[in-house]
Length: 275
Image (cartoon, rainbow, N blue to C red; front, side, top):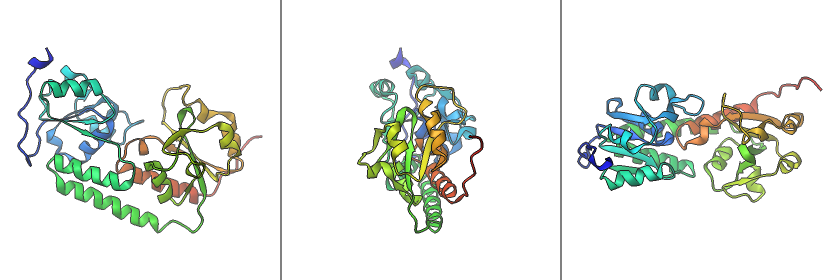
């Protein structure tokens, strides 16, 4: 059945694709930012949820897909864009039937973010849009760098299930660009790793960054972020709730995360109410 569904003709080298389907929330964002709107056939349903996605309003203008092969081929795509760690069975089946699939990895630093934007823009036949977006990122980074003071507060990121982020990660560079020292890196944690709540409590962090999802449903994974001990830590360090959508994807929104962290560090601390 899958093989019997028709595919649109693959565009010639250098030509703009006319029926783009994206299977990954992060590639959705770049497609929505860079592609000719008339050329977008479908993005994922995840990108239409403003709690998790940065381009939800734009994403709602297009049909949503759930990563099913028959569903995707019904759009007759001449370009399918996927993430390297998602929808693996779907991607494999699409390749078997000859669908034009391009996979994108996950950048681990801002240089990789900008390189991926340029690669995506070229693929979409929109190199000028890619250059403009990279220019905007560089301009914002330059302005934000002027706001960094001499002090380097120690920061620790706490994610659901007690995960934190150490050296060799995009989040580590985000913290550095915001003027912080990443305490997880100082503790020898590489990339992503778990950290005990006791370590968080006894650590030397000046700022605790809680990686939250706005308005999300309750979950065991998020319980640690609501632990009473976290609330009590607010008496001696600054608690910053950073929406996960700002750095879930390695895209332009990470600059918003940097700016939000700089603003949070500069803001006066509010006195806690109650006992």
